[in-house]
Length: 269
Image (cartoon, rainbow, N blue to C red; front, side, top):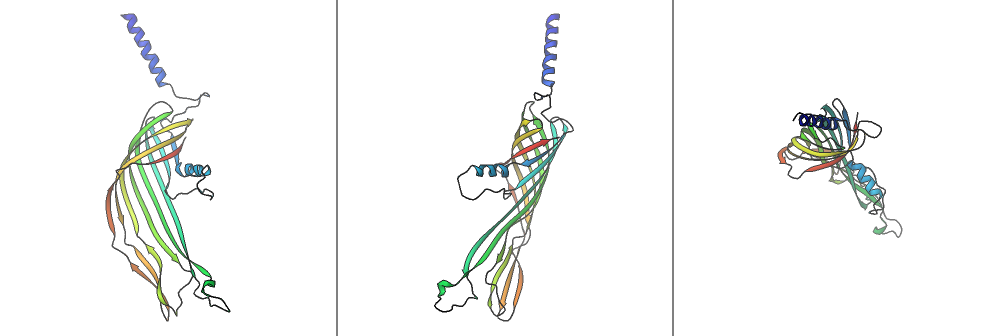
């Protein structure tokens, strides 16, 4: 009985020692983060889209990096080997311009010229969106290998200007004209607050460097302020600008039924 007890004790000690060993590479460099470490993560989606387009035959234009769908930078600090507090900063910006070609109203035909010879000028409509988001949360981890599972909860705040339009015209209104040209459509500033849960995995491709994928679900509240429009008006004697308030402000709750996700590249220090 004594021998059995001693054997079991030795086996238990050996197993504990094995599982307590720190995961390192062949050079003995630690791979996984530990208590007191911090990390910086960047959104990998724009870079993956860029690389994918390099090898794609779809379209003849050269690929460019875009942040149209958002770009996220994150930070983490490890309270212990399996628990971290984290923060996020998300930024998104987009701007698209549509061009219409119209006849130059100042042109006058000479000689045998006809209406078909009238030169064209450009009317442009630029639609832009800009947004910033901040998040903070608590993350828990599972696993002792290069592949780590994590989950947790976080809060988020956001501010954005979505779908504002600016117009420019090749034929500017003159004081002797009569008519109206729209200069701006402003949709109002949107503020948002959300709470959610997240889960994901990270794989450590090298010591303190990982590629991660994450999904999130949440409940959010948003409030959009009153918008406005700006018009240029010509009445035959002068040209003036008029700003008109748009619809009243609005607010809404939304539940994110489908998970949202992104990929990240993470560096631990």
